[in-house]
Length: 70
Image 1 (cartoon, rainbow, N blue to C red):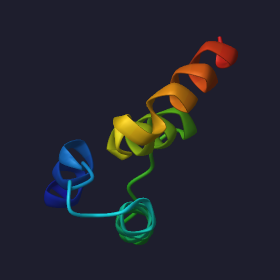
Image 2 (image 1 turned 180 degrees about the horizontal axis):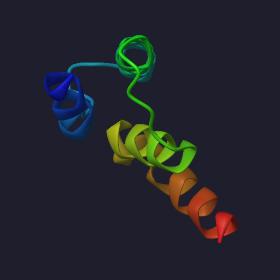
Image 3 (image 1 turned 180 degrees about the vertical axis):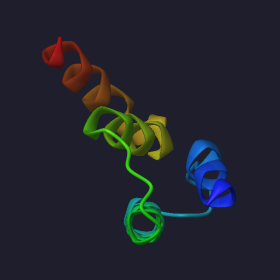
């Protein structure tokens, strides 16, 4: 369980991955965490995915979404 928590904490998209691959990896990670009973808040899950997405492509959109959330 601690290894899975650490994997979540360190999760980042790789430069060689496209957005679809990053999201698939992220979904698998969240699914595995759920199976183990590891619960994260929606805010934690959203922030982790947002941080993993390539900022050169998604940066503007993510900034707009973050500004509208507050």
